Amino acid sequence: MKADGSILSLALKRPASSARQSTRDRILAHAADIASRDGLEGLTIGRLADDLSMSKSGLIAHFGNKEGLQLAAIEFASEVFVREVVLNVLDARRGIERLNAMLDAWLHYVERSVFSGGCFFMAASLEMDGRPGPVKKRLQVATRWWFDALADEIRFAVRARELPSNTDFTQLAFELHAFAQESNWGYQMFGDKKWFVRARASMAARLTIEK
Image 1 (cartoon, helix red, strand yellow):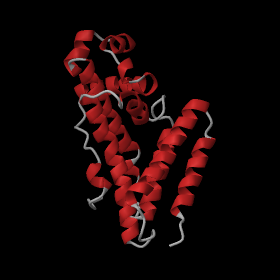
Image 2 (spheres, helix red, strand yellow):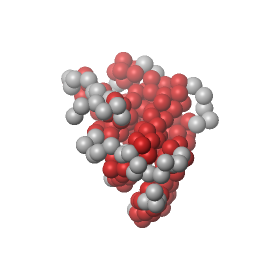
Image 3 (tube, helix red, strand yellow):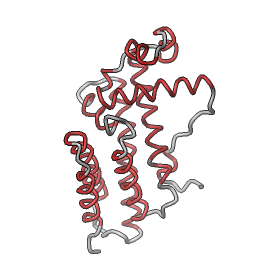
């Protein structure tokens, strides 16, 4: 694959594996899973030490403090999203084909409960949206790029005449993003996968506008 000026440039390059990195990833996988269920505030050095049978000093050496742990969990969740969603859609042709692939991969990612509490970023955003500071700022970056990637693909589809020329890129991205977020909410709240069916139907209807 070569860069095409789109979401490929957003794919995070993971560092070379090592024993230290493997240990850090194991810690962060558990931390991100906790955060998806119990929130970023539910992450503590002490809790992780108990869960993973590690020393607190060892965890402090990795992350420094609770805020460092929270920021690292966000970075890890971002890498997981790139691996599970972004890298799986890059072979799709740019425009409507790739936009549909992005949406389907996103819904499939949430539907499979990659994190046990559902969408890590929806949970974290709802928790931290009213709390200023470095954690909120990092979440803003981690969530806005995907919204912008959707809008960018819509813009490309319009230029390719696959969508009406008067399409509002940001508005359509907002609606598609909302459908996905609502399906996550419905599934987590009620345990019913029909919410994903509804989201897919809504997305399909929104993208089959007569040109």
